[in-house]
Length: 419
Ligand code: AMP
Image 1 (cartoon, rainbow, N blue to C red):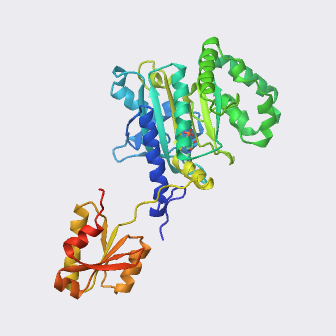
Image 2 (image 1 turned 90 degrees about the vertical axis):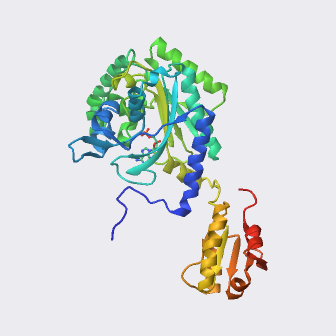
Image 3 (image 1 turned 135 degrees about the horizontal axis):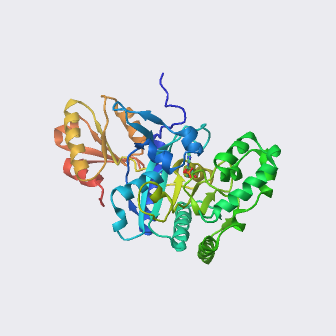
């Protein structure tokens, strides 16, 4: 027996209302904030992610689905959305458009991670990028968009963690201080952190090992090392968010798992904290366009996992709109009726009314039971008598009322009034 591969999920029809709800809400907020949709390939040249996400990140070191195709091309299933969008921005010369270019996408992404609740190997994201503007109001705007989107979904009691991780002017001095501090405490931290300190020092702040927490608490804070330009930028982001009274918590330990970030970084957290359960996150990545071969271009982005949103919607008991049931169930009894049913169903569908035909020569009782369990509003029963007289018995499934009508009137009765 085949099973879906480990870390992947089938989304069955009964789960689809959650997906539709989240995706439609995402599109609505993207439009409200002026984001246009972009769709990029599921796989890209491996080098794009190695260069974009960062060779020393967990994603690139351990988690990528990389393969050679039959032509010997080195390809990778996208582990995230930003690198592809930036590649497209450069490839299509989008710097000539009005800046910033605001782009969103709804994507699948792939990471070879240890599967657990809210952590999959194939997962889905709502991804937003605003490329070509350094103004801190843009950082505040994308954080606000994330916030209003979650709020629009009906999620409650979330918090925003916010930090600035500086830029190439001020971060080196901070990393030096951090490294010196960790070297003095080398015996107290986990082997992972001892290694991280030399390949990707900021990530020590992100370590989940309990042993490292006291050291993290005492470590120097990046916000004490920001240069004037970064400090000013961060102050404007904070005051713009304060003006909207968003529940922002400054967290000088907040860093993110991808190398391309600078200055503003943020995450949105649900009230029940799982191990690593940020609902979404993002930040500024002013160096990435240039690093991928474009001209120097500031940018800021945000990504949130659809599966994690759905887990939280369920957890918070948010009701989502149900998928519409088929409206009409046609019950043909006998051979001649089956032909009439086929034409009737076609007529109804062409008028925009969803219709099913009861199949398999089952009994009236069995077919009505089926119409009932599918939540159809109407059944149309076509027996020998009805066929002989050009009529149909129209049954309202909830009220259990029946009426025999000439076929054209039967059709009028059950068709949607508004299409
Ligand atoms: P990241 O690209 O790591 O910043 O992730 C952004 C968001 O994508 C996270 O906050 C999650 O909601 C979601 N996400 C990341 N990795 C996974 C995963 N392995 N499974 C499910 N969702 C994920």
